[in-house]
Image (cartoon, rainbow, N blue to C red):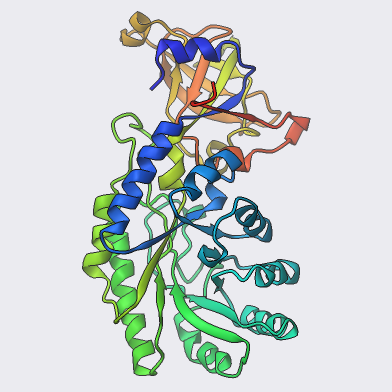
Length: 390
């Protein structure tokens, strides 16, 4: 991933920083477009994964839409000149101010998650003499077989409208003069690597579609969300997710009605592998059962390990090739400088002998890395470096 020329350039850049390989992002987007276009599928990029302006401008250039979960994400999409008619707005807690802004932008669709939300959007749209297009986010009660914090499609989760509420919701929409029902929306979770979960989703969508057909309700758009996972353990071997198998599965198992369009909301699978957090070793500390490699990056720069116990491949990119190839590695707890015991990137990590000043790469950090960074401990905000500008 990192040749010596790039590593030498890193030496002159103040750490920590996010390094984005633009070529990897473009290769990924090429694969997304190639495979989704086979079936005329429509892809929206989930801004919550990474809202870096430089990257958004590249993504937008591929004529991909925007999936937003806050008013500010809608604003960012508009500022980056995503087509408003390709912006969808989801989220369980949209404020009146956020809804009003989205109405003013004439976005494509609100993904609605409760009866009361539909009522409020109708009120606000009426005040503006506008019609709001909505999709019902339905909770399909499908297990995504992923981490409990990023599962969203079970009845116990806060997301979506439950199946037993459909009759009430549909009857209410019929009384809302400024609401137009144009779609159904589903999202069962994130970092899903078992494609059988998506097959289960397709079968459930088919059942739900039948319910709407039986009630003589025509649905124009089916939005199946995102959630496709990436390989955190072997980023070089599996740099690009298997979009061919992913999109083919939906084509094979979704039973569409005439002229229905299928939408996807991919985030991590598009952006994760192009990003790496580069940090420097501040100190090596000998412990009782392990050594500690204390970095200048911490949970303030990459929250996922502390929040989800998430794995990121950790590499000492300063080590010589001979050291990297040796089997006599040492075990290190790789930790950050934040005053929290949870500020740990990995325990008992096998690394070549590591010393103060070595550069450490935390791989597959393009998704939910920079965007979740914070100023806790009054830390400086992490900066970004791009492969085409270094």
